[in-house]
Length: 376
Image (cartoon, rainbow, N blue to C red; front, side, top):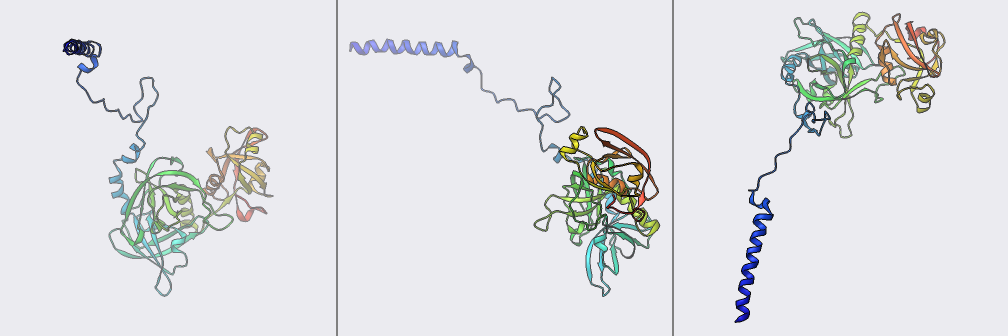
């Protein structure tokens, strides 16, 4: 009994001490529980107080394409047509897309779309069917020009493909699988891509790579920027399954414009060359010439009597620009040279033995005017 009476005061004293500790020495429990403030999603335009950019939503750019793509789509779909290429017996041998570039009926497409065709059936955006004639084609760039008899058509204006930047939004417009005009969006993934699909020593591959959904029927269709300007002609995809896998390629509009202008005026392309053998720059050649970056085009040979020879270029030189446009790789040099006709003049910048040189008024020659070599 005594033990029980002694235990009661001890228990009361312990309870009082515990209450005192909770109330006065653990004040955090007095405050009601609150939910933590949600983390702030800071976009690229918002900076931390010290001026440094903080974490951003990696999908934000992909969720917000340019608002004017709706209007752009309305403008460009009317200028993209479907092309059926028929054999002499009337069987369809290929199909693709085409881009109207003049109100009087000139249409750009790929050479491989119209290759070996005897007649060409064009389905306009308003479902009219017209016959087209072949004006000319160029296998080295995979471009062709056809024409329908029509007036008042809505063409797509050319844009400047030199100003295209990796990461910018683009639209691909075509007629895949014989559907009516189809529009897909994506970004520019890379420039000056060479994927070795064109045959011939003088073929030019300097493609704009995009992740816009492009399927086989898009060949010859339009790649346009936010303004609805033509920045490329969709030409190829890389695919293991035969369908879209995220790699599509377009011929840059500046090259398209030049080739199509030549075909329209002369019936064939007027090709100018420098007359040099070329290769990519290696670590060794970059160090030897004190290049700030591993870029430029290494000259492996110079043809006798060529434009390059007359300008004083030598084996081992590294060409870094043509008319102030940087030539960071072989495809970029090929593209820039291909923009000119024989007889036109360019300026060249190059490195030799660690020193930078410039040659102005270099007169470009045609392939037939060069005596030897694999000129570019």
